[in-house]
Amino acid sequence: DWDAADYLIYASNGGTSTSSLGYEFIVTGNGQIHLTSSDAYIECAGSGDNTPGTDSALFGQNSASVAYAWNRANANMLFGTNNTQALKLDTSQNATFAGEITLNGTDGHINLDGNNAVIFDNSNDNNPWYIRNGGSNAATLQMGTGTPGANIKLTLEGSGNATFAGSVSAVGLNLSSATGPIITLTDTDASIGVDSIIGHIAFVGTEIGSETSRIASVSETAGGEAGLRFYTGASVTQALQLDKDQNATFAGTLTIPSYIYHQSDPSDDTYFGF
Image: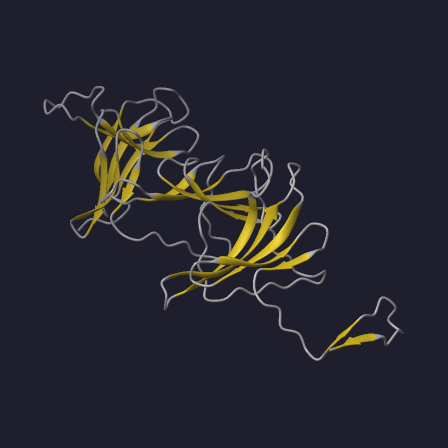
């Protein structure tokens, strides 16, 4: 009948607990193993001949009270529960978990230093999605495919501005601002010429399967001064042009009411009758 304080096994080299040679190995009555030294560890020889060496595994605590599990060999380390592998640390120090990772607490988070990314692997086409901070001094969130930093599809700046690399599809678009919301279409071509489209809004009808009308800003000078042009019909034909000098040109018949009022002076009620 062994008590916890009893020693089943006790071994000592006779050194003191404060000397570099001080070492004790104790197995207590309750099955605990105690190692006392300035750098206590259990070494498992991996060579199969009971000879510790560069391919052994170490489990212990150093003189700075740092606990460690160490594989000296160029091989993986495996950790498991319920007789199943739960975590693998490979020879490149990559960690692979078999289950979910849960962060508890109000401040639980994953901290990625520098511009490191979270990668969503897609083994089917080897073209994974990634999310990363692409800025240096300012927060700039990037989303893209392939190698992090390349093929950027979406950029969110710290100011709140968003830049998409492709088309944006949405059921509805709601813009709100205390100073008046703005939709801006920017042409990045610095060598735009006459009759070049700076930007346009297209209206596509599902019934006809293509664009059915359009509003476009079209350059009228080599310097990029533009007017507005309106296009209608399945052939998207120009119907109205408002040029840079505020002149209006209609391509079709102009239908007017009984009177056209001419009011250069708002208090003037002069009109033309037909």
